[in-house]
Length: 391
Length: 210
Ligand code: SF4
Ligand code: SF4
Image (cartoon, rainbow over all chains, first blue to last red; front, side, top):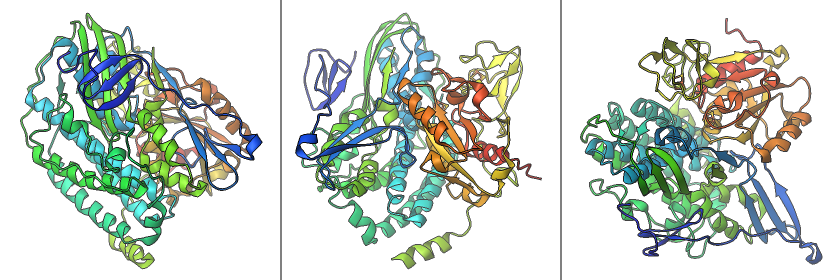
């Protein structure tokens, strides 16, 4: 492993990847933390009520339990295990396993495939060319734009904001079509392989310009809407964001981002800012994501006309341990792999959705149920990557 | 403020395509119908005896020297129609164990480019008001009961729609959540494009688009 060593708890703590504790500059073996249990509260007049696992109000299946004496919510538990998938990857070739890895969270397939491919490349000592590296940054930033648009669209829905909801839906679909023309698939599936990635940047500059202008107009409109702001401000406030990663942490004024401190991707030529906010509430998360959309569009424009991928063939039959970390739309995404003769022997993954769930739960305390959807959507948690295990 | 959004809506004008009454304006290549011959190492056995099997394909590109994507979006199979649903159809989505992409492509049919509402296609939050259940993802232990309950709660007549390779055939990840005999409509793709989803649902109520 070029960038990580076992036994070193150095840098910022990111979270657990199974039995590996991930720090920005090192890895430590050992289980961590605990999951909260639901306990009996009938004696103090409080009741648990369950929402889900399948309800049309949510994009994915998830079980949510609220403890409440009537109106205010005193405790919240999220159970991502209802749709837990056991994905068979061990014993497969590193290329075949990639077909599964990019379907862990299909909406963030670029992040998962790039983090996984980078970990395998680290294990096998494969050096990627400059074209592959810049293509991957373009993919990650396009994915970030679409993901944040999706979150903001879903924030408009419970507010009953039909026009901005449709307008952001329109922009999001425009982005999906651009992703399709750039990468050959609307979700980047099979756009990455071990050692290489290529994009077609033909429509990239004009379309990103137009998408940015359209989004800026909707964003300005939302900022002037008192009803929208009222639903988000002070909703789901996190005090210090200590246990958060990604945009939710940056909304608590923590300037942490794998693009700044991960050696796996080189963003040095990308020239971007990392927006932060102070309030730590749903509004702050909305504002940070909106700022990131504009930053990501500018990164894409800065590097879109970079070098072309060289189409080199790589030998994937080697052995070794590798690790990599990228900034996915929801925060640090980490992979560890152990490869023997091109076969995946072991794998661990840390997803930002899993890391951020407990802070979401804590932020519901004192809220009422009608606040729930806004708060939940503002975190951007994906159950598909939280409820998954490898076999 | 409400007048702001009203005028914003007007300013944008009409963005909805005429599809499925006219060809799609921006069909993706993947997924779309594949045509060709040869190739034997498909990871999902989607090429059997030289024929492409749409519901198993995950569009991984490995066969593209021999099989080419055509852009044709009609990769679905409607086995039973309910004409009574021509007036309106309410869909209940059930995520049995998806990666999330089938979910967002399904949501996209309500975006302005497709605007499923103009075809009187709606989403409902409860199976009790649903004419069709749209199942996405592979079989998982934890969602089995929710799936059975939702199916039982739906009034007759009801359609069962499998959306995406996982739901129809298990795709590359696992097993399909229901026996294929249970499906009235099977929509191929990983994930299926919004065009394919929209046309499949429209045809499930017997619309021939003539
Ligand atoms: S594109 Fe489809 S048919 Fe071709 S190899 Fe991949 S899964 Fe098989
Ligand atoms: S069919 Fe493909 S896109 Fe749909 S849930 Fe399965 S893996 Fe995801």
